[in-house]
Image (cartoon, rainbow, N blue to C red; front, side):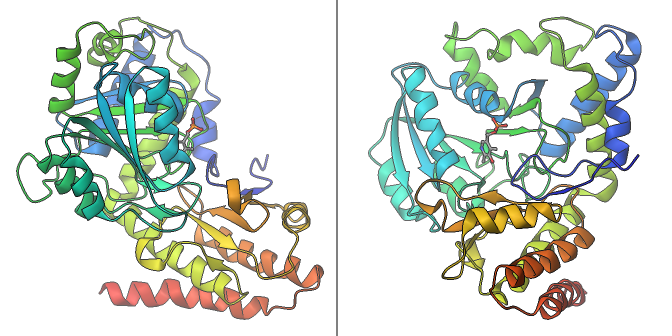
Length: 393
Ligand SMILES: *Cc1c(COP(=O)(O)O)cnc(C)c1O
């Protein structure tokens, strides 16, 4: 059975490979069955490896949003203050989460498609009193990537915790909790993600990693206003997955386990480079159709892009005609709705898929009366991929 009948090139969920589907479809074992416990344990170890953390990781049923909530409620108490550094819709989500828990949030929002100036963050933090700073690594609404090199030192110099939303980045973009950004204590404190984006597993698993400093912050909080989201409830399970707190999503854990094995077999750095190269090539190819990415190449994410339509293209018509050909892309959000579309190019999606999608986007444009050269665009994609590989040597 051919399970991937369509190319799911939205910013998550992403295409699931046959091996991961096979893992998902294995017989459901009890969550305390030693055979399952072994798989769960290995998945937790692989997750630690993924983030390169000497802290603790939490792997549980939920989407990226509950992982965002866990990151916040386990580090910041009601009444305390955070700074939200936002590059779009998902960055802003931390404002709502903070509000729900009585956490004060101040915000620096970039204009959509731009990025926040680290000096502005420095100046804001100098006002004092910020417990943590939240940053989306890749904002899924705009395709803007945050610069960890610039932001981590600024946040850590101010003594705040650095919370990174990796939902659209983890396993595709450089994330390393062991890395020191300039000084030995300048590290990322919390990274959170979901299974369905760059890890390439179906939706349903929330993943959060806490550094020793972030774990210490949790200890200091004492009792918190959370139950399922309280990492203290999960700590015994993560240390010994034979223990029970709430039933793990057994089949999804099989899939996640396989997904992480594939990530490690490919190698993290190889995978990060693959994403960088494909992303540049996709953007170069679609530019030949007059479809420019919203974010400048220097700050563009390697996991998804938001493309502005050339004059006169009807968003609904274009995406429906493209979907008829088996290529699913996403609409744009908020003020960009109707004016742009978003392409996810992450996880286990392949360059063959991208080349075919670029061709079909061209075919669709020609169909709706906007004449483009599809073969030239595919060639541009392939050349850009190859040139980059040559440059690597
Ligand atoms: C998708 C996404 C989220 C939300 O994740 P869900 O799994 O939909 O809850 C949060 N942040 C970013 C950057 C995302 O891309």
